[in-house]
Every structure is written in C-alpha cells, then in structure tokens.
Image (tube, one colour):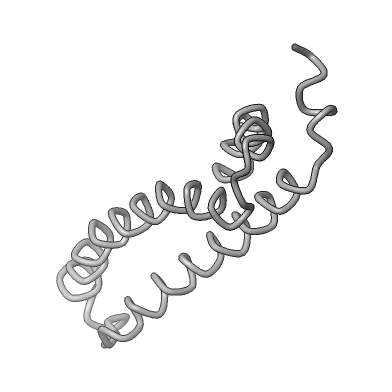
Length: 105
C-alpha cells in the first residue's frame, strides 16, 4: 500500500523525469531504494524481538525451535513482494501518457 501511494503521489515527478529522458528501470531503482531501506530496517528490528518472544515468552508447551533460515526467508519474501509491487506501479507510471499526468498543471 505504501509503495502504491508513494508512486501515485509522485506521478508528476516521474512524468517529468520520463520526458527528460530517464529510463523506466532508473525510475524503478530510484523508488525501490527507499523501500529496501525500510524493509531491511524493519527486518533487523523484528528478528531479535521474534527470537526473544519464541524463546523466552512462550510457555513450554507451545515452544518451537525456529531456524535462522526462516528469518532470512521471511525477509526475502518481503523484499520480493516489494520488488514486484514497485515494478508493477513503476511500469504503469512509466508507460502512461505524459499529457494525462500533467493535465492538471
């Protein structure tokens, strides 16, 4: 949702960049960079909290051992979802007619 909102709010900026010769892949990397930082920060904050919860807070009957690979896999899935979502909305904005985006000006 945050990716969609961010790209929709930057439609005019992306259109002007496109008119000036910026490639869609450059726009994609410009947008995904800020979301990757947020995802990595959230992952590094969540990992110790989840580890602490599963090993110290849960009662013994419900305790389960979670491998460190699960944490990396969850982060990878989040990054993949962010890439796919960002790619979709970036391509949608990149191939939009510039006149439609700048019509309100």
